[in-house]
Length: 307
Image (cartoon, rainbow, N blue to C red):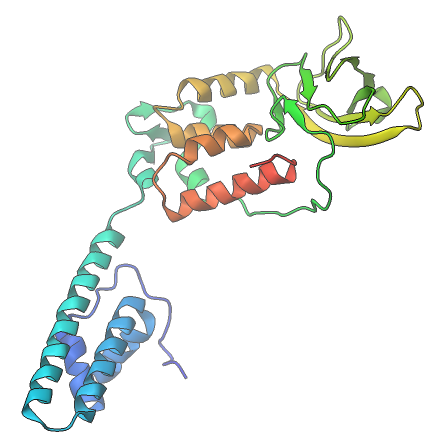
């Protein structure tokens, strides 16, 4: 049973010295600080591992026969183990004291956000909080592989770059013709029959999509002119940006090198998952960035993108 005070260790709580852990191993419950130190060890993973290693070495030493050579070797082993563990502890303390790269460049002061020396636009908000709290990962069902592989626009991204997109896909073996329909998710009755040429499709002349709308693209491949000869189909969803959102996208593209973390967040918010992923994949590999990359991979896989 853990001591009543065995809670999660405070990050500011100092570690035990190596000499203190050795004293605890040698004297055990007889040591006057036994209870306080053992409670710290229960909270601290680093000190706990050091304590366990030294305890195992001490037991080995005590079980050895009192041959002078063996005693010398055992004492030497204990000293070597102590020195090694001291180096490990020093390295762990040094590395854990270094903040992740994003914490060094992102800050929010007096209502103003910065990345490095770059003052960020007001619409970005508190980017430090946004990056430090990645969204949860949701795994949706992807039981069936996409039968018709879309090439452009990038299927990994939810957002469309333009209100007059051109769709292109990989050919299906045995297909003689294709059909492409784009329907507003809010009102499928207003579906748009796209003009198909080979393995590409465009909107009819003088037609454009509505900004800030979600659309569902339905692709079908047929073996012949018979409407019942469908041999493959696929569905993709997209989102059209408002003028303001387009300006945010343009800002992220222009500042991806100077403000990579902020640009990645902006891309994610707009639905440019591939763009955000490519930026963060080049950044230092800390736990928060790894979590962001996992979130982005999940989003792209949900959309049927091949990674």
